[in-house]
Length: 330
Image (cartoon, rainbow, N blue to C red; front, side, top):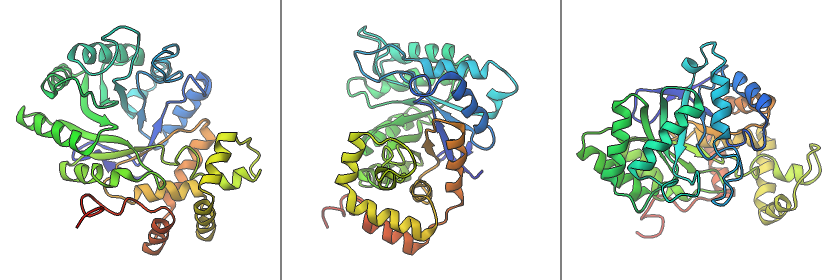
């Protein structure tokens, strides 16, 4: 396994991170245990969230916390599991119907962290991430709550998810004024078909020394051989929604999958390798449904993309035109 620093921190993690959003909702507990056992052979960053485990909808809280509970029961088996992983979770989304069961007030952060620690059956969270920006809570309050958790040893590092570039700048300037490390990472939607963060988020991450952890690296399956599967090859049933997406992107998918065939690499591996070639990316999330899928994901680390291949990928999946403001102005 290859390793990289988590942003400007001294912590190193594997270039692939195990995403557990499916645990409890799509993947049963026994299979989840198998996946995590398999991950120990080189994948150390395990990422979850308090809200994972059921349909993520404000009016459907049943199943929330189940992913953390499954991880907690896996950790409780012992065998040095906790020492072998970097454990990441998140807080922000509704975990109940009360007015303070969501977002990032100091009151909410404290309760959310304690609840996650209980479900995870551990005494500390290695990377505690804000799942979304809270526009109604001042940064002074947020950082005060996070600083307290760090002082108590319940949180080691703090990260963000789904932040805009100016959110990151505001967070870091406020943290610096408090002599606090602030954010070390950002989880964002980023893949060949979704490159908006190249405008301002990635420049902000580079400037402040945050590591990028892309989620949905395969674009919801679009970049994982969707055209091939839509043609009935591979034996998997394709949903009407997936077929509609294939038709929308058919010209690009035809060019993309043809290029992957020329390279002799599976489309999913190429998509992951494209992300990992970016020096801002620390690790990319993979969310396998089986241990076998996790094993195949590792093959992306063996894919090397030449400058000519990178150019061709840019032609097939063009980005926003570079960084702001040059992407749209002089």
